[in-house]
Structures are given as C-alpha cells and as structure tokens.
Amino acid sequence: MFVVEVRDHIMIAHSLPRPVFGPAQGLHGATFVVDAAFFTRDLDDDGLAVDIGAATTVLGETLKPLNYKNLDELPAFAGKVTTTEVIAKYVFDELARAVADKRLGPGSQRICRLKVMLHESHAARGWYEADL
Image (cartoon, rainbow, N blue to C red; front, side, top):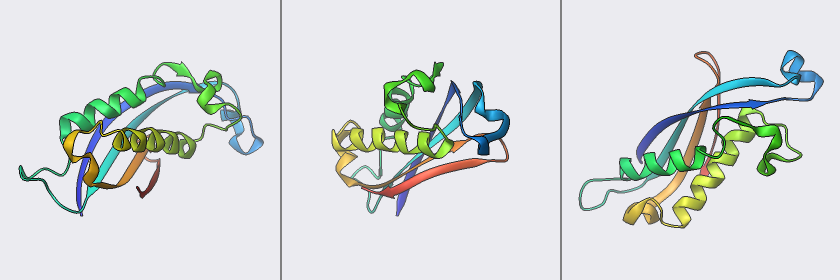
C-alpha cells in the first residue's frame, strides 16, 4: 500500500459536558495537529499515489471552518460531544467527500483508504481510519 500523508493544525474551543471529562467539562481551548493519510494500491504514470499539493489544499479547506471556532456552536457538532475521536471522524467524512468529488485530482479514484489522526499533545493522539 502506498501512502501520502499531509499535516495541518487547528485551534478550537469546546466543552466536554460529561462528568467523565473532569475539568474539561467547561469551555476550554485546544490545538490539534491533524495528519491525513491517503492510501492507494498503485501509483500513476508519474509515480504518484496522490498529489501532495492537492492533499494539502483539501486538508486545509476541510479544517478552515473549524479553525478559531467554538465547536459547541457549529451545526456539524450539534448534540455531539466533540472528543478527539468525534472530530477525527468529522474530518475523515469531509475528506472522503472530497475524494468522491475528485478534488484530489486525477488520482482521486485510486484512493482506497483514509486515516485522520489528531494529536492532542506530544503524548496523546486519536484517529479514525477506514476503507473508502
């Protein structure tokens, strides 16, 4: 399997209003480093799995509506507890939509799997990955 992975980041605010989250129940900020991995089984005639520039652009466009926002106020997260895992799945779904819409260029049809990893800190991360 060939993989191209790109990275960006977001700064968000949110609350996790459940007792299990202790002090994080209140409104707080977080910065996530976001890695998106695009998997293909083969390469194109130019030796590419996925165009890195297109992947970087699509990830940036996907994250822009979240950056510097309070996730508690966004319709996409209404009724959800915005854990790292929930945010990773949201980003995954948006990237999967971009793949289906061929926004990653001619190589879009070769992408067969995605992995979205959010780094909460140097010591903790969570992700969602699945076949397309």
